[in-house]
Length: 193
Image (cartoon, rainbow, N blue to C red; front, side):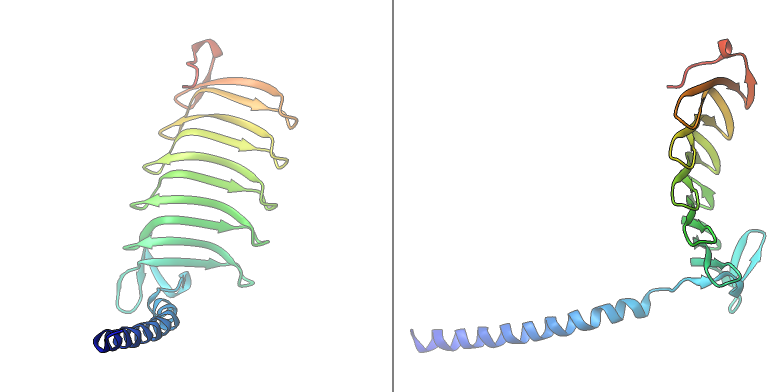
């Protein structure tokens, strides 16, 4: 090996050692940096609510972050995301036993997309779709044993079309028809798409 090549290899090796040392340092401090700048959830009692908008008390500005409500014993009752004082993103409520009760999504302060409810044993209770703060689309409700209880369609918060109702064993027990949220004769009903 030529002296120049050996010198270059030693320099490259030295740089590699420095790089490895720097990477170890970054790996150690990066999590601390992320935690330091992450906004922690805030207790709702520390904010001011006016007309459905949450504000930080000092200085008075709309709240952005995760808001928490608590049961009297200190367990979390509700956790919800807020943007400029109104709900945005995921909202979850909890049974007193700590299990998830409701799971909803919000866009621009309005209920949107999938929403779900759960029994205190964790079993799915209901699920549906929402758009612009209104139930829109398929809605299903379940018995605590997991069997389908009923299902049907909503349009702008109004029951529409054929709704099917089931016994606890899963047997179809009744079919109803709704037009503009009013039950009508089954013959006047369109089938779900």
